[in-house]
Amino acid sequence: MFTNTLSNKITAQIIVAVAVMALGFMAFTSNASAATYAYVDASGDVRSVVANDWKTAIATAPNIHINSGVMLLTTAADFTIVGDSVVGY
Image 1 (cartoon, helix red, strand yellow):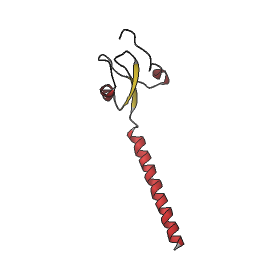
Image 2: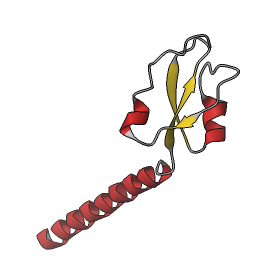
Image 3: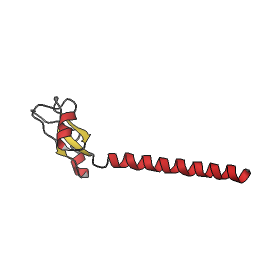
Image 4: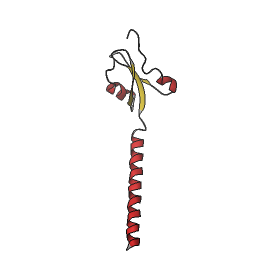
């Protein structure tokens, strides 16, 4: 009786562990294609937005300036522009 109960608990723990690993893997792969883009907002400040592609970045960037595009941020040096202001924009 004790062995059967212990076996059931171990089986349940294994099932829970596999389910947690599967959920973690799905969460990682769903964001794997997301990238960070920079854009200029309506007040002239450089901001960042995370999106799967540039079209989505432009469409979802909050308060984006009408003449702003987006720039893919790929290196540490690229990220230094976020927070800067664009004069005369």
